[in-house]
Image (tube, rainbow, N blue to C red; front, side, top):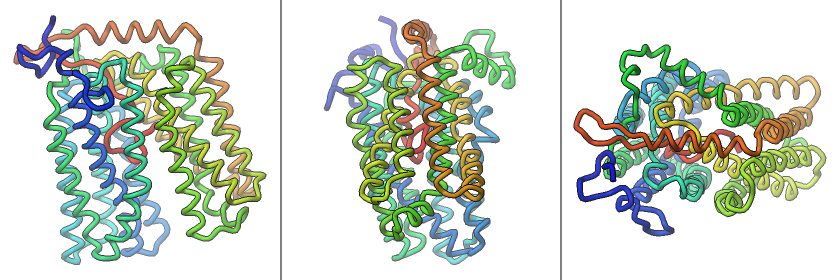
Length: 462
């Protein structure tokens, strides 16, 4: 049997994947623990960094700029980073990215503690964190399938998504606000520790993750390398359809959630605490989605779940516009949260089964640029529509966009295309080569909805 990267001569791939708790190997649980620790840090940031911004300035433009600063690098650097990641050992990229993020938030914590911080420092740190996040998120896509094997992808993605949801949406924000009230530097300091713990845990994952490259690729320019990934995405029918559908989902979610706080006040007369309960209901639905995604994926055809989940989200937003009960609204948002997580887990597992390992970074980056780039556009269109026609119109727009995504998947995803694409992707991943030290490279991409440290770990926002 051919030796895999980072394995000793006495350790075969099957031994490396020896089942542990819940049938998943030791290395997966190292990654899961890293996800949990890092997710807690992300949750701290969700509440503490906006509080820090509002402490330093009351200018709405600057406060909103802080929210956008971490995502802006995707639009400028996403494709470039994708090309670079497909040239490097992705495990090293993960370690360096988390190490850089630890230094950044620790520097912020020190500046706040010494009274030297300001809004401009926060904006710079957030932009730098967002840049490191691109390297991390794009690289981590190549880890999980190599660790758990293709047969356990949906289960692994579901566990990662569920853990991230609990810590990012439940525990972290409340803890971040409490810590900020005690000492403004403390959330950033603990966040830095979470990144460092992530480095330690990721270092324990065995193997190298250098993608296979053809001999001609060594002399290919970065621009041509990026173009190759874009051509692959355009040429694969299913992945192209999923990417376009995710654009519609991103726009729809952004249009609805951009005005949801105002809609909740107008439609259901909710205060800030009441709106927080709506968010909690949505998060509970997300947790439920992480629990049911794997069983549903085992029982239903591949394209039925994405199309059905988009229909479910569309129905939830449509019914929100006519609901007069806050309790019903919470239930509908829980349904939406469930549907979005099912969408993420299933479509990501489908995509990672299709993309050749050597192209994972570039295809993932292109896909995510589309996904994240659509959200600001959806928010702007939804806000403009709400200003002109009323808040309900923005939520209705979301329902229409989500329904359109369902139709696109149902029509564009042929019933037999999936198997052919998976076979091609699997064949590409089985062809391994050795690096300069003579060890074979690990292959296969990771689920987009299961990366270790992104806000929701997902293509589409709940």
